[in-house]
Image (cartoon, rainbow, N blue to C red; front, side):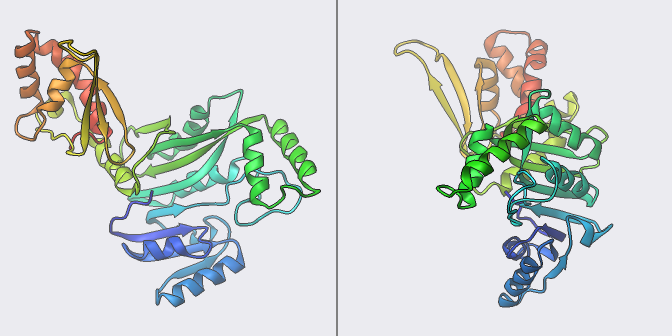
Length: 342
C-alpha cells in the first residue's frame, strides 16, 4: 500500500528487521527507522549493512526518537494487536497500551510530524464497540489532525475469531495455557466494551485544505495489488473532486482505459437492466449507472468538456440540459474522487 514516489524524508516507524526501510530507500533521499526493541534495531542495522544502505536507525518508543522532525512519508506496521496485560507479551505484535490506543497514537502523533504534502500510511486494527459506530470512532481520531484521510476496513472479526487468530499465532493451540488465555482475553474485551475488531488500511495526507476530505468505509472486496498507485490516485483526486461546478464542467475528462463496462439484461430486450462501470485496477471499485450517466462517461475521452458532453447527451435524450447537469455533476464528482476520471 506504500506510495512509491520520490520523497525527501521518510520514516519507517517500528522497523523490525528493516524491510520497509530497504524499500523506502529506493525512492526516499533520507530514511529514518525506529523501533522500541533493541534486537529489532540491531537487525535493521544489519539489514542496512548487508545492502550497503546508509540508514538512520534510532531506538525508542513511537515518535520519541524523531522528536519534532517532519517527514514527507511515514509508513508503519505497528504492534497493533489488542491483548490483555497478562501472560507473555510478544513485542513484535503487542504494545503496552490499552485497547487500540497504540494505533490511535500512531495516527494522531504521526499527523503532527507530516511535512506539507506529506503522507502517513498505517496497517492496523481498531476496536468496535456497541455504544459507537466504528466510523465515528475513527473520525474522532482523524478530524482534529486537519489531514485528508482514507480509511478502508478490510475485515471485521468478532472477539472469538480475533482471539483465536492470535492465540494460534502465539503457538498456544493445544497447550495447557490455551483455555486460560482465551478466558482472560474475553474478560479483557468485555471490560472495555469491545464487541469486534476492525482491521485495515489508514492513510492521512496533509493537503493543507481548509475542509479536509475524510472517507471511512468498509472495503472487503478484491483489490489489485500493489496499491501504492491507488492511494496516490486518491490523493490526486481529492482536490479535483472539490472543484466548483463551473470548473468541473469546464474540464475535459478522460475515463481510465482500465475501466470495463458490464451490462446485464434479459435476452431480446432493447435496454439492459443494469450497467456497471468496473475498475480493473487499484481498489477495484464498481458503480452502477443509468443511461444518462453511462452516456456521459462513455464520451469522456479527453476531447470535449464535461459540460459539452452533458449538453449533447441531453439533446439525444430530449431532456433539459441544465436539469441533467444538476443530476449528473455530483455523480461525476464522486467518480473523479474514486479515480475513474482523470
